[in-house]
Image (cartoon, rainbow, N blue to C red; front, side, top):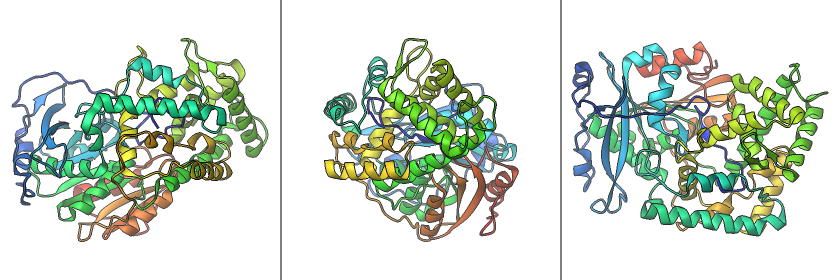
Length: 511
């Protein structure tokens, strides 16, 4: 949910704890390695009618860092009217001598920056073999970052909204919440304009095919994590004949309505909270005692205290319950960060020191130490989600959904309730519909699911692998969000062999 929303925002960005900033400065245009140019196959598929000028545009790569090149292309704002206004898509790449092809990447979100992924995350996420085999291509999807962006409010307004203690489950707060979200939606519409009606995932997937064509590739090789799996599956369903080697890691189930997505995530994070508490109780730094269930009650009691008495950080910022829970949730995306969460909760409970928790919340929102926001990820997250999935915002439906969330996820469920309030205030109706994406006739797609994934529960990966016409499911037996680059050698080997050599792991492979 957006920064001004009273609901918790589950940013399904697989690399949330590792994302850095991309810095671009102009340099020479003729710097791409010779082998990278010669290795690209000519695109064989013809351009869709009316889109020829977009499909045949030329890329002009320029150095924008010591090893990164950047370029910009044009795509139609509205594919139903390609002769109308066009928008910019920002691309970057790590080009290597001897690369056998290009691989496009997306880090999730929606709202995650592919530019940041390529400039900051790829060196630690991708194996050395994979980095030698491919030119890694990043892009900011429409509405995101350096591409034509969704723009809503200033940093100061975003900070102000994050400090408001608005609790959607408290009836007396709901009127103020509605006014706040209406103001937010009006600012987004005023500052972004017509683009706000065209940042849906289907349009972004069509952009990917333009990228494939301008790269000169007959088929697209792709690695998408989290929301990036939904983007990739949408592409595969639209252009199955153009699918090369596709890895969809931490899959979403495109057939689920919004309420079921929220409920599954709430249950997923509730389970990971239990797993973290079990780990915490083994540490001397843990602020809880007793069994996991007893510790969970203590955690719920502390959350209730923050609901009524927001905390204050050392920089003077107020930390109400929603921002606190956003900070609490972020380390649950990666079990290697659980010890940091233990330290942060110990400081908050025993020392009334909320700085570490606020730091996690700032990281989730891309807030910098100087008070600026490095990206528009929260705004793009809201804009894309409101277009992609219709939501029922009737009072009765929202109350029923909230009741079920609190029943199934007693620790975190209430903080995910009432999310459709924001989209109800939106000026643009949703255009997406939950549906099975089967990509008939595509090459084999590799879907990866993590058994203990809270943000994209394992059953979603199972579902997507079954829905796709030609897919294999690879399972990681571990905790955390997504698997490649953060799990084990078994996953790395399976993915590399598939992407580099075209060898699909045996059905039922578990790592």
